[in-house]
Amino acid sequence: MKQAKVLNQDELKRLLKIVQFTRHKERNRLIVLLSFMAGLRACEIAQLRIKDVISEAGDVKDTIYLKSFQTKGNSDQQVVVSEALCKEVRQYIIKNKHLLNNREGHLLRSQKTRKGFSSQTIQNLFRFLYQEAHIENASSHSGRRSFITNLSEKGVSVRVIQELARHSSMSVTQKYIDMSVDKLKNAVELVGI
Image (cartoon, rainbow, N blue to C red; front, side, top):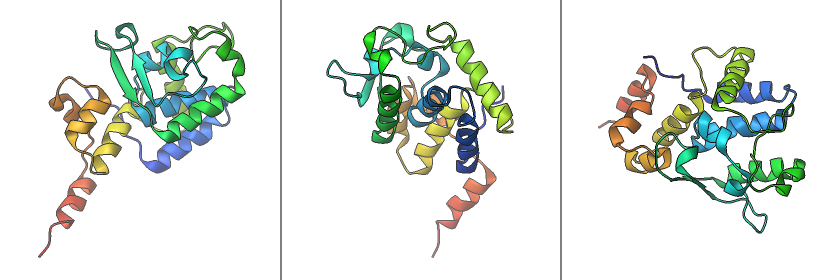
């Protein structure tokens, strides 16, 4: 089975530019960033509740604690959130203050039904956005693979990446890291005398 495409910086910028022209641009931007900046799966994005990302005091949490029903596995998991992603969540909440009225409610909601999305709806949104951005071979899993590959390229150890990706084994994490001829060439250029 072919793995989802890992996006480069230009493709990610193009994707985010397309998002700006969608009807619900703030919501769609946050969906994309949760995938690319935290490595969340479509099913996890769909299941996020206000209480998962916003504390009782109204602050954006720097760690999201997911219950087993919200994840792919059958275990509770934690997602570490960068300051940049916290800022994006904060901006989204400021523009959608009405969401704070129901802490049990979904973070991301359909404007039509006012209910949360299904995993399939999130996958369909990604498919639409990639088509509009003319990015081939990408799927809802591209953000997660890009997140993992980018960490690897920045020199983060595979063990740390495994924890951030919430994988049960290092071998699964290693399968997510994209390899290309250019990366191999760049690696051997680091060796010299």
